[in-house]
Amino acid sequence: MKRIFSSLSLLALLALPTHSGIPINGSQTCPSSGNKRLSTTSTKTIQLTIAAPFTNTGNITIGGSGVTTTNAILLLPGGSFNFAPQGNASSHDLSQTFFACTVSADSVVWTGAQ
Image 1 (cartoon, one colour):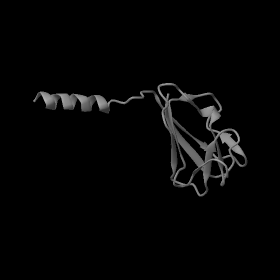
Image 2: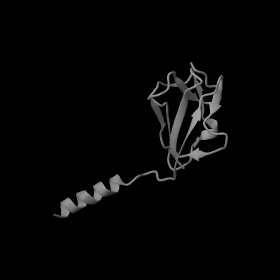
Image 3: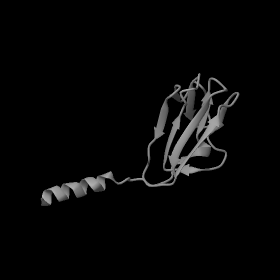
Image 4: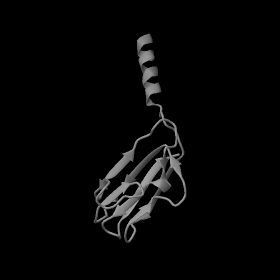
């Protein structure tokens, strides 16, 4: 009985989230040319996931300020990319994360934790 209780206690501790934070999310439409920031204001997150909606008809690339449609992480329609947590520091700044699109009518959505 004692072992069962100990095992259940350990499982309960492992189920606790290791990175708590305030959930935030948003979306951006694609630029008509070049690239665009996820946010014009400096918003830092612990964790960040960027997704291309299924309704997109083109491809999205995500990266730094020099991102183009051919030189960065590729998102097909319905695809997503997760910038994993790096400790408890807010290491992903939305104003420093850029995206480029092959179709200007497309969009990106993002979610994260501050």
